[in-house]
Amino acid sequence: MSGELRVDQASGRWVLAATVGGSGLAMLDSTVVNVALERLGRDLDADFAALQWVVNGYTLSLAALILLGGALGDRFGRRRVFLVGVVWFAVASALCGLAPTVGMLVAGRVLQGIGGALLTPGSLALIAASFRPADRSRAIGAWSGLGGVAGAIGPFVGGALVDWTWRAVFWINVPVAVAVVLITLRHVPESRDPDAGGGIDLLGAALAVLGLGGITFALTEIGTAGAGPTVLVSGVVGVLAMVAFLVVEHRSPHPLVPLSMFRDPLFSGTNAVTLLLYGALGVFFFLLMLQMQTVAGFSPTVAGTSLLPITALMLLLSARAGALADRIGPRPLMTVGPLLAAGGFLLAIRVGPGASYLADVLPATVLLGLGLAATVAPLTATVLASADEHHAGIASGINNAVARSAGLLAVAVIPVAAGLGGADYTDPAVYNAGFRRAMLIGAALLVLSSAMSAVLIRPVKAVPAGPQAGSAGTAVPAGQVPAGQAGSAGTAVPAGQAGPAGSAAVAPLRLAECVHCGVAGPQLHPGPSTPAAAAGPGTGRA
Image (cartoon, rainbow, N blue to C red):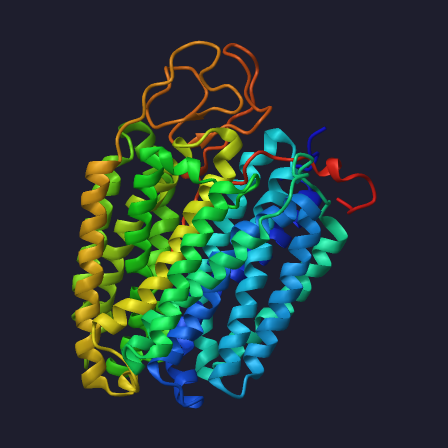
């Protein structure tokens, strides 16, 4: 039995409101806090390494635990885990807003990331489970588009809040979370995955946190404390934990990350491109907000507005890029897009003392936005084209975690490589020099990602004509489907929504052609949908 909600009914719109509100909380805290860094750093007397941890504390727990959050929802109920995540996120946000020291703020940010990891996968899975098959793609498209709009206006609103007090960036999450909880309790039905009866890879999740945390600590502190015993021990522990993580995932009967998926060169290559692309993006958004306020003298509101062209262009053009990749394949766009983005990094070097928003900031962000709009949707399509329908959700989840891990490591290491540390962010001349070097490093990463796309992103073998093409469980790559058959670039056809050739079929989920904003990470795929009714009666009201 499938979900029965419709997009054009009030019950369906309530589910959309709850899931967009919840996922929007986690997405905005990946970017908006960057706008507040200069003010909170001065207020809490934080050094540059502490600012890195304000950003990376959140990213660390979110990147390491997002796959576990999805598994917990499948096992114990997506609505239940989503609610726990929203409440957890709200409490952590309140703690961040009240933090008297930067150490307590970082601890609150780590807790925020845990909440984000619990609610983010559940928000999309709830949509896939709650809506009837004919409305599912439309509902996911609405979730994606509305989330993108929130991502576009969030930094602007965040900047205005910072002009009042940086603490308001965290406090604003609390009333939003309260509204999401009330709507979810009243209107969102429960669902579970009936096949999720095996164990949960808690050991793998713990090793991922320890590994990423140890490596990030070592890379961050080496710029301040040098290669001392504590830094070396942390780095060694982190590397050993990541090696142990790979061993555990290889042996586990229910791994968070099925390593066998990386045997596919298309999947491995796309994730390598993702690593470089989102590593560069993570450090760009982190450093640009400080550059605009410390060096160029812009207010937090104007600094937040600088991100608006990037998100607006992605909202306007990402779906078109996905459709174009459907026709010509993803490789041309994934090759050209990072080069455009690299041009944006180079133009950002002009953002210095006395910079003009229109002449210096806007051209850089517009060019970067065009590059991302050309790249992210085809990248999403390619990841999904490398996995069958059953693994579409885990494939996009891994890709999203790779993107967040890339930002985590880049924010730790690139500022150190650029010579930034200590109180440099309070000295305009010193920070400006480091910012320029960091932009050159980021541009080099983007050029390398372009070259890797040209070499590694190859067309997938065509799906032969016949009953199998476009059948349930088949992910059909770009341009490989004979005319008249279901399937498209990166389209994983949800189970039960497409049948043999010639039979009636619901339009497949064309995720890469959804309007979305991939600034924080590539678009997630809901995976095979589990009907809301599968959780049994009485678990929620539609």
